[in-house]
Amino acid sequence: MPVQRPGCLIEALPRPKELEKAFRNYRYAGPIFVAPPWREIYHDDDDRTQDWLAAKATYVAVTAAWKKYGYDLVELPKASVEERVLFVKKRLA
View 1 (tube, helix red, strand yellow):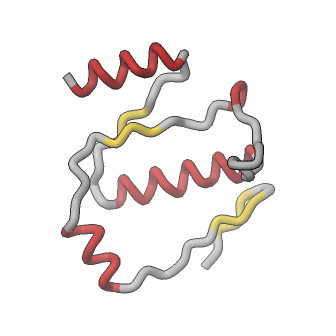
View 2 (cartoon, one colour; view 1 turned 120 degrees about the vertical axis):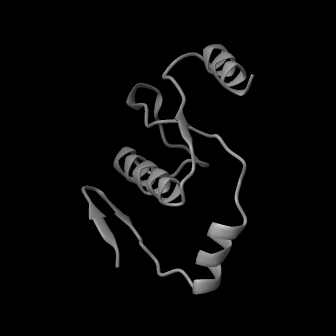
View 3 (spheres, helix red, strand yellow; view 1 turned 90 degrees about the vertical axis):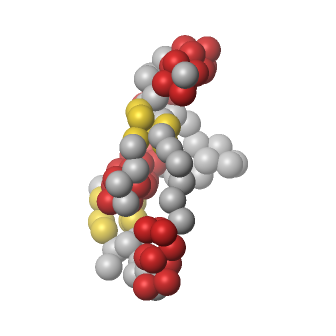
């Protein structure tokens, strides 16, 4: 059933049982670094076609799915690229 958000539509498509089993049995060895929506730097272009509201809704849906399967999410700081690189390196050390 689709989930309606202001300005966008996120589809919650049914998953086959085999896919659900794969999600649980073939784990990614996290942590998983996620970049939160950042309005000040967001813009759409030929590669990023979602508008701001759709991008935010996608972030919520994707992070909820990762959490559902017990993954450790680490939110990247809203900082320069260099600062983000240092953040990731420190987290992985």
